[in-house]
Length: 157
Image 1 (cartoon, rainbow, N blue to C red):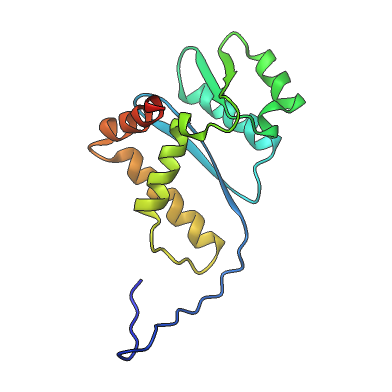
Image 2 (cartoon, helix red, strand yellow):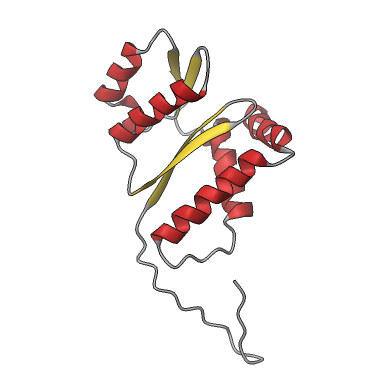
């Protein structure tokens, strides 16, 4: 978005965004990632649905590395994990250690490179643009190097 103002005057941008919440959830492998965006907060049902998506997206066994968010430790999520323990194993990151989570580097890249200076008109426009940006990241020619960089950053800590 570009704007202008008379010389010496600060430009004023006006928009009518109602500040609804858009949440993201992602799983990252050494080669790619999958994601989902949700209007509002992510709840247990969305976590379980995303785990189902991961089971369809990834062949073989899956290791889920959670941060210690309450939603990851909920009873329904634990029951789901127990039901699918032949394909899904889980472990937790140490408390207060987002620097060990490669998905955090994906979010930082997404916000700093793809969403920087984007001023949406509404939550729908934000969701659409954000989703397209994540798809672009996933399709990039240098994607293997980019995804590997997220893992490398996490290993440095």
